[in-house]
Length: 76
Image 1 (cartoon, rainbow, N blue to C red):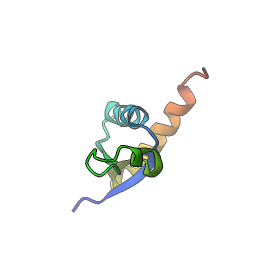
Image 2: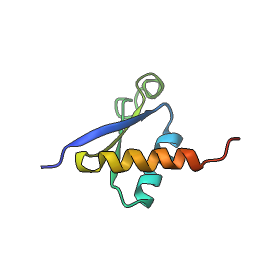
Image 3: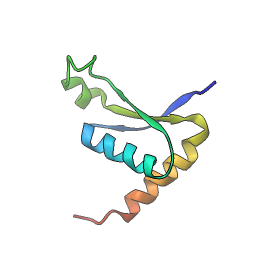
Image 4: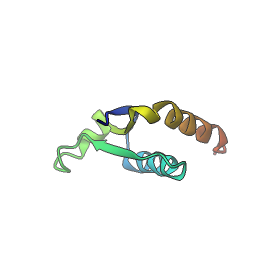
């Protein structure tokens, strides 16, 4: 039985999708959980955030991938 764990919370959809794409490039399956009641209350995305979920077996690797990616990104 798979159990999904939230490893990060983002305040906007673009950041969440970029993190999800980074994990996909590393071969890690992930899901986004929106807290906007099905799109009816988008303001909740900003207050509650968008959660990035991965299988509990991938938590350590996924966090490492996201941390490494943050170190690689140039300062703007």
